Amino acid sequence: MLEKLALLLAIAGCVNWGLVGLFQLDAVALYLGGAATIPGRVAYTLAAMGGIGCLPLLFRGK
Image (tube, rainbow, N blue to C red; front, side):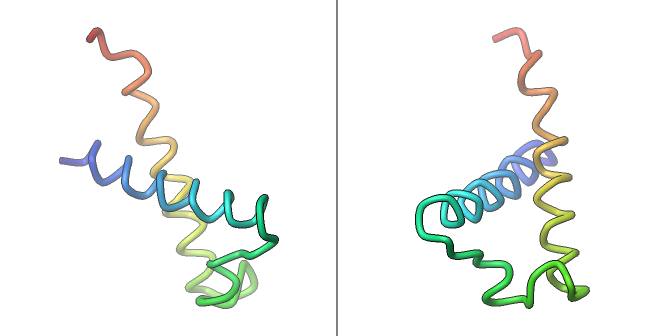
């Protein structure tokens, strides 16, 4: 369950960075005020925690 949540958070972060790279559109900044606000910092931190939480998937033996 936690790995699925981590994967979902990582995907959300990847979509945001994809939007930044392709269209110069930061969805977190647009909807939550960016890194200067508490909600924006929470969103960026959750995306980072999701990416870190996905690390065990790299070492799974399947």
